[in-house]
Image (tube, rainbow, N blue to C red; front, side, top):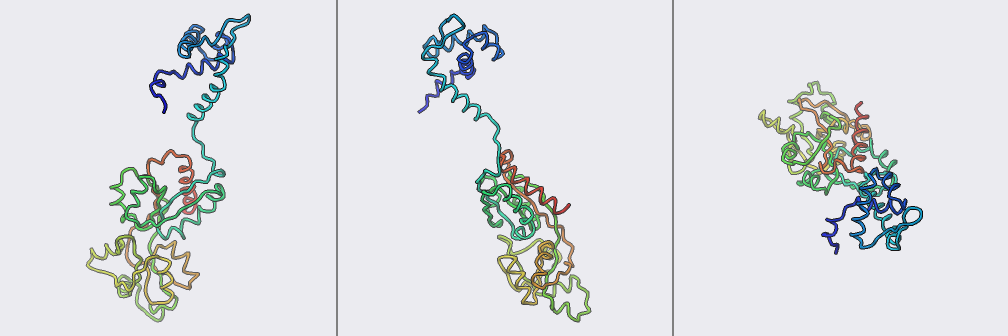
Length: 317
């Protein structure tokens, strides 16, 4: 076990002074390199002799000659000062050489909307890292961000659903990546598209049966809360666990799915579906990046964070 008491009385400047004296073998030259007076260097040498119980240098015809004990210390001094230099040097993150594992919690639509915008560039710069993507909707997502179990989280549903939890989670930082709106998805030959002269309005929308994607611990979206305030509600035909399953169900039923527009427009052409406007006024969906404040200065974390932010910014510019 280290004797900490000894370290409390050791002045690192003495170690530096001894190293320079061993290189110069002259108090005058050492003082010049250390930007000290000759008197200060002589006093340091006196303290070193007392500390190490050895004269360390003896007078010679030209300067000073190190004692065997002093020469014996030189390799140790070199290693010690190199270690100290490494210790105080700023940490530099080199993406190409890193094999770090980043854990990120994602809301489901992020896989289609945002992930393709930055994933290629991240692995181009850092080919050996591992990205561990997890479900956003776990009860303790913010807590995991705060204590370091997760590096990042991207929340892509109406951010108002997350604000009550977010406000209770001190120590969390955030950055808004982009905004989106909600639309409706139906199959190409849905009855509302075939021969009906009715206007696609809120009343017609509420007459339909709907597919609902479960959002965490609550089966209601912000949309449903707005309808409830008006004494209205949707007729939910089926609850599913993920939005990709919901989109596929649209292709085989007359049910209506309400989903983010970027996500919908990306997928519907592949499944021969049709996008309709949502006939209910809603605030925008905000896709937000979250991380623990304790990670702010970590170089690898900052690099990953800026990669996400910069590439998502290009998407909306």
